Length: 250
Image 1 (cartoon, helix red, strand yellow):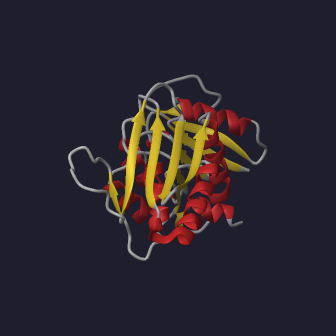
Image 2 (tube, rainbow, N blue to C red):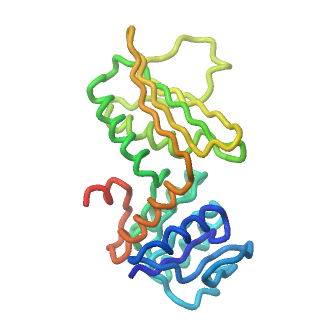
Image 3 (cartoon, rainbow, N blue to C red):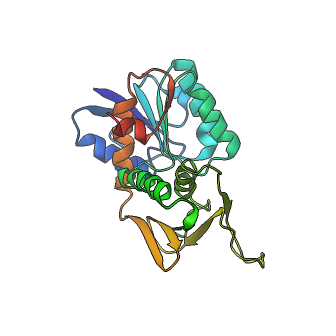
């Protein structure tokens, strides 16, 4: 039985994770961390210092500002962590990678199985198409999302770049550039509106033909399911940086 602490327990994703865990018999939530109080079937604390029982793994769906305290607790107590929050700075991502040298860390920009399959399909596509097709990525999210482009869009672009002999550059905005599109770029476009959970589209545009890969998340529960699966997978692992591809390989 994997004992889980949810960071951001009183937020929407925290409540969804708790609901998913309640329907499983291989894990349980022993506590939550959240500065905002709320109803829960387990104790919720404002700080990590208040935790009275050591968890087997932490699932984080909170805010980048929590990272320092969370990693400090994990490193001090040897607790694995599933980092599912988005919007991290480059420095914070480096901090996550550094922590993985001492404790197990599961880190991906998107916990959806479908998105990770899409990344693999994109890698296959670019290995076949080579430099003959222009590549554009369009991502859509709700009007409350703060970061743009999404971490998932960057993850998809990075996956594509990993298959190229000479990495492409990312172009986020063209309105100020009066020039033809370069063949060595990946265009990134962000749309924010309404209550869109998350849509990502990769466009491979060639001469007289277009190939499109698209993923739509209709509910945030797809991310919560992935996070819980990651927590069970991570419990008991040795120190290191793990991703969805590691979990899918087993």
